[in-house]
Amino acid sequence: MTQQLDPKTLAAEEAYKLVIGAVVPRPIAWVSTLNAKGRVNLAPFSAFTFVSPKPPMLAISVGRKGGAYKDTGRNILAREEFVIHIADQTLLAPLHQSSVEYPADVSEVDELGIETLPSAVIETPRLAAAPIAMECRLRQVIEFGETRSRLIVGEVVMFHFRDGLVENGKIDTKALNPICRLGGPRYATLGEIITMQPVAQTPKS
Image 1 (cartoon, rainbow, N blue to C red):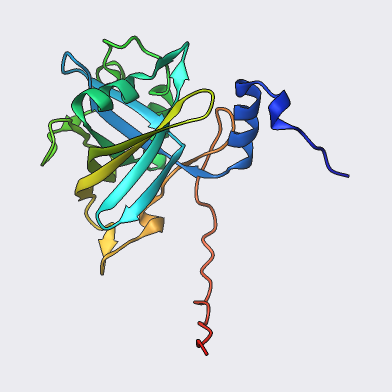
Image 2 (cartoon, rainbow, N blue to C red; image 1 turned 90 degrees about the vertical axis):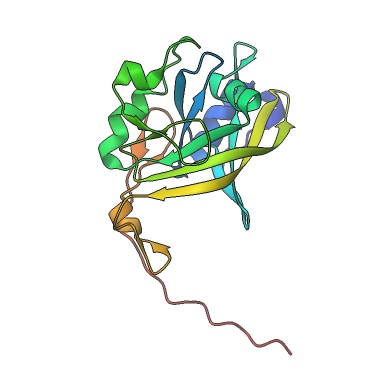
């Protein structure tokens, strides 16, 4: 037996809960931006992926709260830059706390005591403790659905990696020890890493 649900009968919040419970695990973009007063805003986004390798481009989906777009989305559109961080397991607590809806003029990094460093190319600071930080410039915004969520695409203009993470051009995923998002206030770690043999390519006739 299977249960069927017609999405047309669901409210946006009901559909959201089902989608975030089904599309798991999800990587988390921990995004820093600057507001109009130059304060650092910080928030996690698990609707996150890469869209291009050359130039490298990343995308996050930013929704609305109470009819207004979240601070991160407004800041990116205003300044056209942001930093995406990948957090490891040691940063789970501050990452989770940064998901709280603080007032727009409150800096999450100040509230949570998170150290920042200057970025190399853009004005927005990066997080000192993050194993990976990617400075991004805004390239495209696409609006989707009845809730008008915005897919924000940024081009990576500088990578920052913790020493020892990159070897022979590849990231050591076990050393990175990233965290991922599940449904609700739940997270997961990598657990067992399974390495498969490369799939043999069938010669074209």
